[in-house]
Amino acid sequence: MFKELFTDDSDRGVSPVIGVILMVAITVILAAVIGAFVLGLGDQVSNNAPQASFSFEFADDNVTVTHNGGDNIPNSTLNVTNSSGGVTFAEDPVTTGDSVELGYSSGEVIRVIWNNPAGGSSNVLAERQAPQ
Image (cartoon, one colour):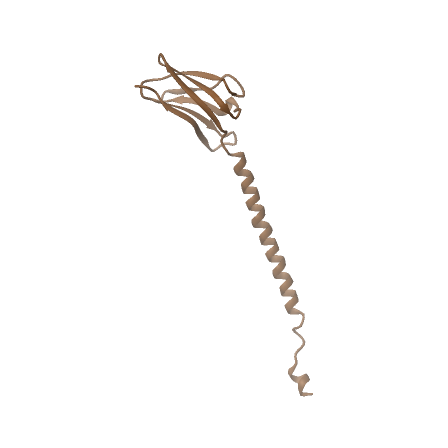
């Protein structure tokens, strides 16, 4: 009789329910974190600049820029620039051996710039300073 007075069995089902709720919450949070990480990596892959090498040949106030190897690049995303403007390659896509000519002034920097087609960023793939 005294034993029944001090024993309270009304809270027996609360602990397992709280445990299940916590496990479900942790699973949902982990899924969200992993999903955000994986989707974030997918966006970075598409924004990487192409890997290519270019050579610069300076002669008679013109520079010839030649694609020496690496990735094929759509010409709409590639510009060869100096301080007074720029030109694009005629070939599409720009592949090994393709070249373009641009006038230059003494000491100016010639750059091959890739513009991300997704927008928002550009990368200098190669640059060279013109002889003085």
